[in-house]
Length: 248
Image (cartoon, rainbow, N blue to C red; front, side, top):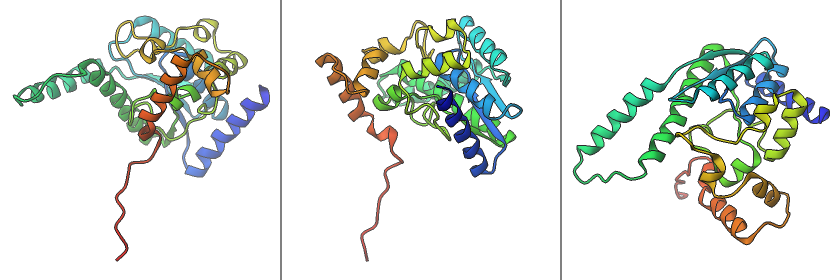
């Protein structure tokens, strides 16, 4: 584990130097993955690592956990409360859509949740431009494989240090780094709406997705769900589709 952490930290440093920038930053949610990234980027750049808390009607517990992560990891931190901004944007968009009499309100909760993720990422990049930092993503192998991230939201980042590690491996890295027990064992949630949990929304568990990625047997129902999600979200893992002119 020590070797793995050293490899990630060295890769983070190389990524920054190749880009000609100053350091690294991450959005800290109070969950496991962003906590592990916070600890890693602090090791890579002790004086140039930043954790940004971006509450949007977020639970007080999540924000308390996020603050404890920045304090225990040693990274610099700041908070940008986007609650009112999100409300104004989403209300304005909804009002304009309702003016279109043919508009039918569908997927209202999901649309609002995706706007949260994209608003947060826009904020991170605005801050990153000020400090000349790279924005570090938090997706693990399970989330990446099934596309459990918002396109141009939490998936719109510069680098992904955890993308080849299963959820359990991320937990083990966190334990090695000294992430607090209550974060290591916390039920995964993107905090997109009240009571939301990752596994309930996905329809299976991280343990089963991890097992599938490791080539182990999983129940047919879970295997089909995982494979279907992987197919449906292929566009998220690829650059924008481009039109190519025919040879003239």
